[in-house]
Image (cartoon, rainbow, N blue to C red; front, top):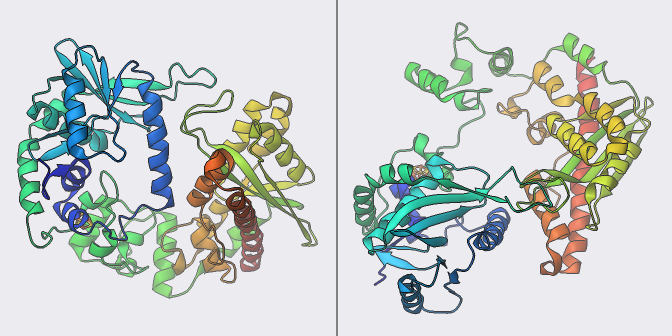
Amino acid sequence: MISHYTLTKKTFLAGAQCLKRMWWEMYDPSAPETRPGLVSRFRMDEGAKVGILARTFVPGGRLIKRGGRSLNVILADSKEALADLSVPAIYECAVIADNALVFPDILQRVDGGFCLIEVKSKTSVSEQKHIPDVAIQTHVLRAAGIPIVRCEIMHLSRECVYPDLSNLFAREDVTELVEARLQTLDREIRDQLITAQLPIAPNVEIGAHCKRPEPCPFMNRCWPVAPTDHVSNLYKVTEKMLAEFEASGWASIRDLPDDVQLSAIAARQRRALREGHRVVERETLLEAMKTLAYPVAHIDFETIQPAIPIWNGCRPYDQIPVQLSCHLVNADHTETHSQWLFDGKGDPRPGMANAILEACKSAATVTAYSSQFERGCIELVAEACPDKAALLKGIADNLVDLQPIVRENVYDEKFAGSFSIKRVVPALVPDLGYDDLPIAEAETASIQLSRMLLGGPTVHPEEKAELREALLEYCKRDTAAMVALSNRLSELAH
Ligand code: SF4
């Protein structure tokens, strides 16, 4: 029978990371930190679609429906299906035992018992994340008398290339890893059940466990906000370095003595903080800016990553560019803006190929910020459009990246150890931000693009029109920011 203290897979996994996290999730279920936002709702929906498709690869099974039915009815249905030897597989059954409730994705009947199959919408097995998940299910199923003789994780396979989806999933045997994890499970469940009955959250110190296997949603509650000069904001600082700094009593980057070996960039960061002003390496910055021959095209892409590929030659989670913004700046500083956004019909890559070539046709230099991403996008489009591949590859090979120009030559305290465009632009061009935009960062843009282009009738046409406007504004702001940043870098160099 389910009680207030019955563990679910979700609470167990939270407790496996941290008992305080588990307690908060149980007793503060409407905490803003755990309320699913756009990103997690989208990921959950996508996971559900992958789960449904996975069942077709273990066919002939019986689905235990949940919607609107009481847990007791679902449990009874599950019991009946498990006992019926004519049912080769059971999807989403409910099993409760040892104060824990689980809903295994697939139980496939095999010699001597069942194979437990956990479906993941990832492309590989994460030992830290997935094994405890399968272990708690195995524990509960066995405690209920269901013989689990094999455990598998069924995940999306990057070997799969559309249109052939026959190998969309890979099944990995994780039985040994699960058996090893089960050794400590009794004690963990006991500790969790004790914690679940505490009147207040247990006291747990912050530490490396807060970030693994995933960042805890309560970091803002437990972790003090680090000032920008804190050693944790040192450029490319490692956990080992942080431990050494802490042991030596150095909390601020300013405190780090000269004989602490730092990279040139981190040393510039220390210098900027000690001197209390922005550091600019004028000579080398000027040299770097001279590589931008006019006209300069500043380009930026937005992409979608369908879990299940939908276009020829694509694999699960290929990052497909579907939106382009380009600001073309002439030597006299006049500029023109062009943009392209996929309309959702057919394959986006031929349209994108034309848009890239058109936007960059008169440019002597094409820039991107953190250009590895843009280079990958152009190469992916080139692969799909052999007739334009040579021209596209020419652009990809000659992309000038603005990020290393900043990184190697400028440090401002407001960067706080990061050279992302969202950190650099507000520090160097304070008038240009993203706060006024309805879509203000890349992950949200990617999800809204997916919803708008692939969401079908689940997204109202009016919302689609609004999203389109917001996405165009967002991508345009990125390239406008690159223009403003280039101008600012030129000023700083002189
Ligand atoms: S931030 Fe760390 S200590 Fe706080 S609840 Fe999360 S995992 Fe536990």
